[in-house]
Length: 334
Image 1 (spheres, rainbow, N blue to C red):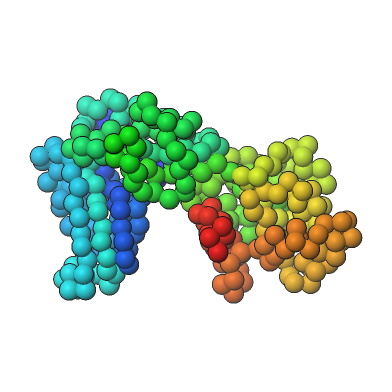
Image 2: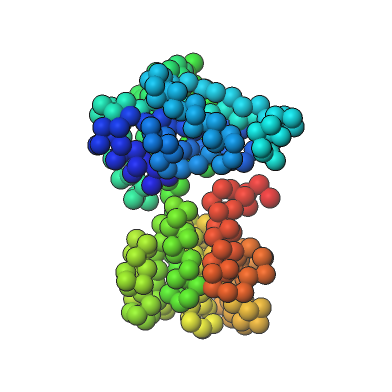
């Protein structure tokens, strides 16, 4: 997302018109869901994807036509079994694509790109709002404080989709879902995990008691690195109920110190890396400290989705998968 709007900003500064192609609605088995987006110029696809394959190629051709006509419109693909075969696809279902023509002289859009990129650096809930009441004359805005286009919007969730408000049609898409991933321990798994989470639009803070494992040179994608005392983490950070905690320190004693401190705060996610024996020892200590079995079971131990991960890179993928699931509200639905 960030790279796409950076690219759109470049196009506007260079004086190139473009077309934003967005999946605004989908049903059935489709390659990508609502919120998938690509940016098309006369050179072809500059950034992003709506799922690849023949549908994306056809969408690029339609975007080229939109560029020539300087028009915005919605195009639907109904992918029945025969149609998916004709399009070279395995998936089937219905997809609605919004082709938004962006003039090279659209100063308002250039300003909005700057605001969007600034918002993505903040830890505040924000959504991208597109008014689609008249699809040929769309307006895009940024929702951060519950209001946009002079309207008070109802609470919006982590999924992209369309809503009706005061007789008008809007497409809403989460831009930033507030919450920081606090990673305690800057070892090999953390070094694989942070770049992956940053690519997935998670804000990461890394803390270790060793300066060589907690510095910007090791974690250039982290918003902050902290070398400090793991027995006193609140001298350095403030963890809220919106945040995620990944505990992967250099030893079970330090894991215990961190877990004991964060459990009372009830962050959105707590995950602890380690063997079942290590987790059992830590659990016994927490029980002796007065924590209930329910509180301890709320932690993800061991951390990550069970994909039989072995290497640091594989463990990082399993952790990222679990965080995606939690961020999307999967735990509330299960």
